[in-house]
Image 1 (spheres, rainbow, N blue to C red):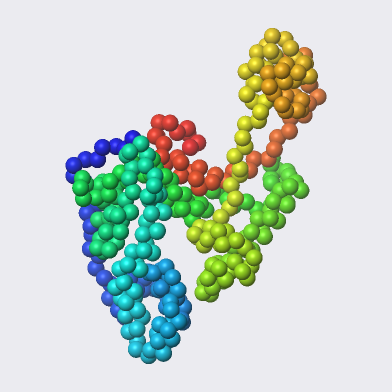
Image 2 (image 1 turned 60 degrees about the vertical axis):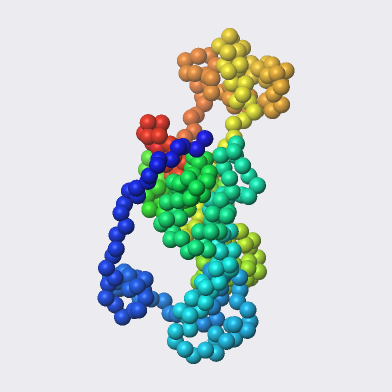
Length: 357
């Protein structure tokens, strides 16, 4: 159920106006970037071709490629201010701009014309369309989405469920890009594990896993290289034989996306654990007998799964503990949590988190 919004809302930080640094560049954004690059002894990349500039401008603003006639006219125009005039021309067509970015905002806010959650959520498409057509500043748009005013802002968007989904998605995107900055102590590699001064060689499964990771890394580097050279996602997909959704995931991550360990679902025998513990305490230590008993209750798994679970019941000092059993310790490895697992921690109360979390 959506939380009741206060009558008035004050932003936690007041807007600040920064002084534009002095620079040879005309565009204020270029001036800020120029100072940043100069402090790190870097320089701007070479300007792209006019054809690529026009293609990017049309796709970013209108969401479609440019007509051939307009491309030809733009390429033959020798005026140095043609780039700025092209942007102004595209932004003047409010219908094309709104139609493109309306899809982006609908996806971001999980807005759907035909979905209504218990009467509390309604489609905000008309409000979004009006905001984009009226060139509503982004800071006011976000404020209205988070705290909609009656009869003015969008109705029903700021419910807890959708705010939680948006928070998790945003945190997941950031953590996917920054996962090597402290969340993960060390990336996986094919180096042998050192335990108690002894080198433990990797198993065949670990070697195959590392080979698969290396192939994914090569594909990722090739995709990013082609994208920097100006190739579209469709062209990269056709050249490398990779699905476009994989290419989009590579480009959005910002870093090579490591595969997280899949979550292991509890086995079918785990639902009979309490019964097996009780029967073990009653003195029934025959695995086959226990297997037959839980099969009568609906268990359809193999006997080996029952034997594996029952083996954990054998305690040292009893006749059922195998003295000659050698305890096998697997080498400790760094478990890389997925971005979604780490993002979920931000949404939980501090008192519910363990010391490790």
